[in-house]
Image (cartoon, rainbow, N blue to C red; front, side, top):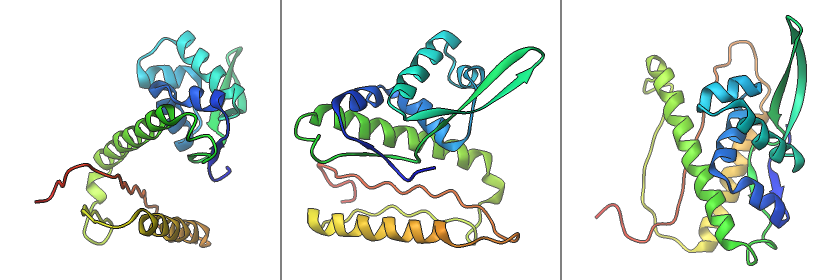
Length: 185
């Protein structure tokens, strides 16, 4: 799977600005699913799920990765083509409102998914196997951009380390957002 899908035009941005499509794409980043599985997971009719999948497929945000025949029925398994999204900076001045909606939806859905993952793995959470930290930091936009770049390099480096059979799997979610008012007084 490619690293991040770069949203380069208004049609792509409009497609992913729908919160339901964000939810579907994030599900498909995590694993391959059929229309039926997605429908059950989000509580939406198959026809509506199929419509959203077709819209995402048009923009190459998802793809059919395999087909399976079971008792005469053909099941198509969908998967995200990338493991995240990035909006091309040239598009931002033209579509700032959509971009804000997309980023907000992505972050909210990632946090919801993280809550589910934590709930399903509570028994594995110890000081040695987990970490969580919430801080409030004041810095310039340039300093923040530099930190994001270093952080992304660290994640890429960790992801590229060759694993062995004794490895453990870790789910990492880091969230950083600008806030108007201090949370910590």
